[in-house]
Length: 142
Image (tube, rainbow, N blue to C red):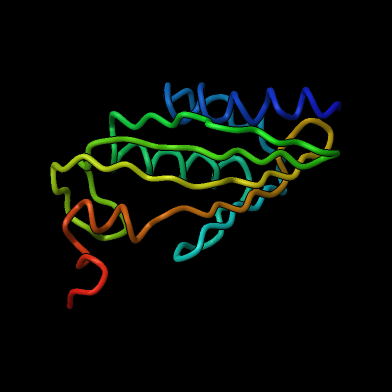
């Protein structure tokens, strides 16, 4: 697959799976040996793990919407820098719903083989999001 096709598949993972909730695309977009890494969470493996991660995010933030701000691709890697917004209406990593809106920024580096994502590394401003939800103190305050 070409770099442009990999970029399109990365876009589809955001727009169609996360933003619109079409979890049926998991088998099409991620490899059977897929591994998704996000600090603080166990690795998500295979299409089922991908679906579980997307379900966790959509359950915690039913109105979640990620906007891809920048996409950079070279060879078999695609990097998306994003801004995400949503209202915390479901449990997130053991945190009860707060009803508060949050904005989060981050990046995802995705590795593709044969047009499917085989590995992804997510890096996002979790502390900032937790502060917006009122479950972590502002910086400099205990």
